[in-house]
Amino acid sequence: MDIDLVALPDDVETLQNLVRSLAAERASLSEAKAEIERLNLIIKKLQRSQFGRLAERLDDDQLQLVWWIVRAR
Image (tube, rainbow, N blue to C red; front, top):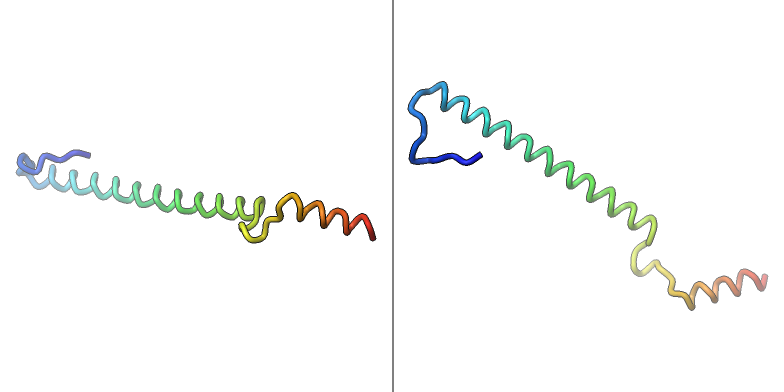
């Protein structure tokens, strides 16, 4: 909401409505930020479960070696 600070209304009721509106927008923004943070954490967990940490991943040669060892047993 854009507010012209130079031309604020003089009556109390209009100012109260303006403050309530701003408070509602702020609460909505806080909820949206919390939801974004929650979704980012879910994405990170899913990525880690699918791809692992960089140090935990095996390259193709390592995978072939493990496969060769498992088949040799």
